[in-house]
Length: 153
Image (cartoon, rainbow, N blue to C red; front, side):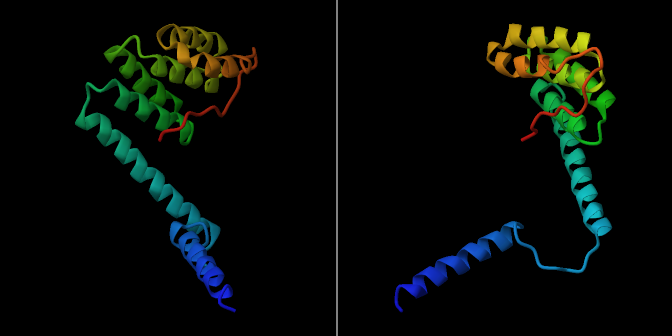
C-alpha cells in the first residue's frame, strides 16, 4: 500500500501541472466564438508587442525581421510582412534570415521567381540556410504556393 501513495502523488502533481499549463482546462461553458475572441485578443497583444519592438529600436534589423515573421504568419498580412522585411534589409543588406523571410513571403504571394532570387541571396549571406531553402525551393511552381511560415519565437 505504501508504494501506491507516491504513485498517486506523482499522478496528482502531473495533472496539476497539465491543468495550470493550459493543457487541461475546465469546461467553462464558453462557446467556440468566445475562444476565438480570446485568441484574437492574444494575437492583437502579440501584434502590439512586435510593433513596439521596432518602435523601441528602429535600427534593429532583427526586430524588423521578427515583426515581418509575425505579419507573414498571422492573417496573411503579406504586404505588411514584406514592408518589415524590406526595412530589415535596408538596415542590413546581407542579413540572410531577412532574405529567407522575403522568399517565404513571395511564395505566399504566389511569386515564385522573386522567391527564388531571395532564396539565392539568403544562402549567399547565410550558407546555413541552404537546407531550408532547398525545402522551400522544391515547392516553387508556376502556380504558386500558400501558407508558408517561419516561427516567431
